[in-house]
Image (cartoon, rainbow, N blue to C red; front, side, top):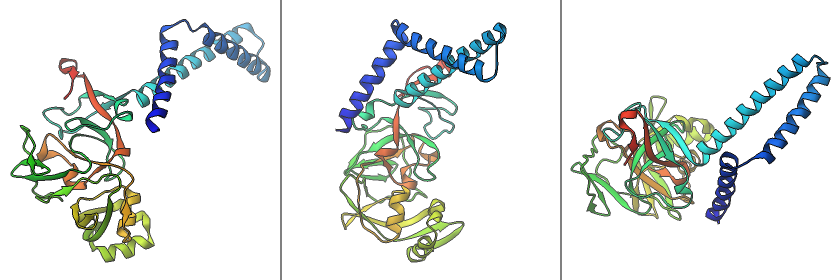
Length: 301
C-alpha cells in the first residue's frame, strides 16, 4: 500500500515538474500574473502608493520574489524527493570517497525496493541522531554477521571483499550478531553504560532514566546482553524510543527492518561495530554520482 501511495505521489510530482520545466506553462503564468496584480493593488491601497515609478518598483520586487519562491520550491521538491546533495567530511569511506567530495544521492529507489548489499547508504545516524552518515551496506535484515580475522562473515560464509575489517576496541568484537528484522522480539537483560563520564550497571541506569528520560541522549553502551527471540545475540538499537523501553526492562516486537553498515576505511570509521544497526526509517538514499571535484566526476560504487 505504501509503495502504491509513493507511486501516485511520484507520478503527480514528476508530471508537474515535466509540465512546468519543459512545456508551455501559460496557464500557470496567467494565474501568477493575476496574483501579482492582485497583490500590487492591495499593497498600493494599503500603503497609499500612487506614483507609477513606485508601483513599477513594487511590481519588480514581487516579480523577483515570485521567481525566488518558485526556485526554492523546485529545489526542495528535487532534493527531498529525487536527488540529495551531500558532502562527506571524513575519511571513513576512503579510498572510495575522499574527504570533502560532493555527491548526488538517489532518493527514489528505496521508496520502491529494499536496499541491497554493497550499496553505499546515506542515513541519519542513530547515536546522536543529528548527523548524516555515509556507509556501505554489509548485512541485511535476518542475517548473522561476524567480523573475524579482518574479514566479514555473513551466515557463516566469508564475504568476498578486498577490504580489511577490524574488530578491536569495538562493541561487537568477534561476537556473532543477528541483524534484527520486522517481527523479532528484542530484550536487554544486562549491561554497562556510560552516562556523563560515569559508568552504570543496567539496574542503576534504569533507576536514573526512569526519573529523567532526557538522560537517554547522553547514554553510550559499553557492553550489553541484548537478545532476539529469547536466545539469539544481537547488537544495540540506539533509536531513542526503543532504547528507553529496553532499559525499562520491556520486551519489544520490532516493527521495522534493520541494516548493518561499515565504512570502507575500517580503521577510521564509526559504524555498526560501535553503535549497532540502522533502522529502515533512517535511510535517506544511496550514493550515486560524484560531481565534485570535477576531476573525479562519475558514478560511485
